[in-house]
Length: 196
Length: 196
DNA sequence: GTGGTACCCTAACGAACGTTCGACCGGCCT
DNA sequence: AGGCCGGTCGAACGTTCGTTAGGGTACCAC
Image 1 (cartoon, chains in turn orange, cyan, red, green):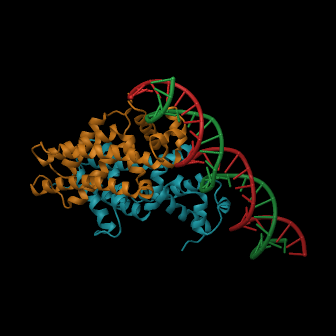
Image 2 (spheres, rainbow over the protein chains, first blue to last red):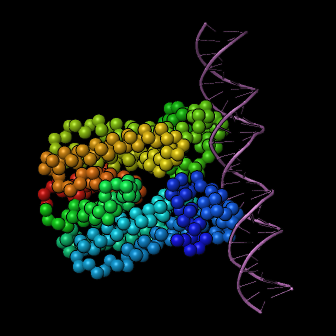
Image 3 (cartoon, helix red, strand yellow):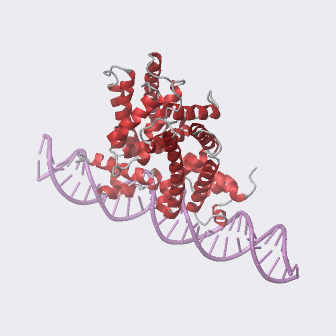
């Protein structure tokens, strides 16, 4: 499954950080999880915070590039946003451990590696701006009914980002069903895309 | 301002935990912030995790009791929910440090003091259930248009809880304005309370 | 005055922390 | 055969961790 030892380490650290938090997990615990000694980790990462950066940066950037790439093809703004939000929820679930670490330990990056923090924040910001622009354009085109596109974008992103806090695979609904429902609540409900 | 030394400690610890995280803050750092030595903290709290519990439990319980207490008086379900969500946002902002700690370090409580964790989760759950019931009743009364009251409650709570992630007092809008806007987006938008 | 209690101190405990160092072992290149 | 090098190791570095023990001072009750 995991090709290189480096990926193996990133994967183990992601799981531990997500479950216990960055500061609660020692280098020796990460090493134990992949069956080596703590000192051997420094062959792959120069420090603990660089390991955190690898986790947070990789998945976040990949996600945002993916999402911003195929915004184009759908005909209406409503359909574009529905697809974007649905993909957002399913991706966030697929990479929920990485995203949990990326969101929660962002402050640690801010303190220990400010340049990495700024870089990540900028990436995230570009995504938020894209969503906001989509909403604003949809409003201008008469598809959406919304007083403040900026606030609506923040509200909708807060909404879709919160799915991982409660969703469990053992529940009655699949993640795809939840993703579709959330996209509908945002686009057809909050933004009033469909006349009732 | 702060009457007792105990409250002073809780306040200082809240600020430090919120900014840096539970595990990143040592007992000596908390003691420094109130001008005493680390060992003196154990005169007020038997352990670090009890201090965390005091922070997380106090504000969460007070909030939920407040919110559930005065649900009654408003005539329509829409008005009740609007008021509830507006108060939710403004309270969460007023106690944003405590709430940030309560939300983020919940896992630590789960690991170190499972009974406290269960107790907090139950309290939170009762609040979520109350919101869901309000939505369900509003649907039954024909005020709301909503396919899945459970999902809608989760979405709306995720939405209002996320305000603290971006809101800053230096921005253009007051927290009261944002609270009203969020309540409107949830009740009139997502739940379709007002015919468009 | 005597005893007790509230509060704070210094000092220390053992454990864990992130990180560094030097050595060893096994393949690959020449 | 000999040398380089990626990968791992044990051991140790100095620091910080949460916590405990015991002592001291100020005030309050009797």
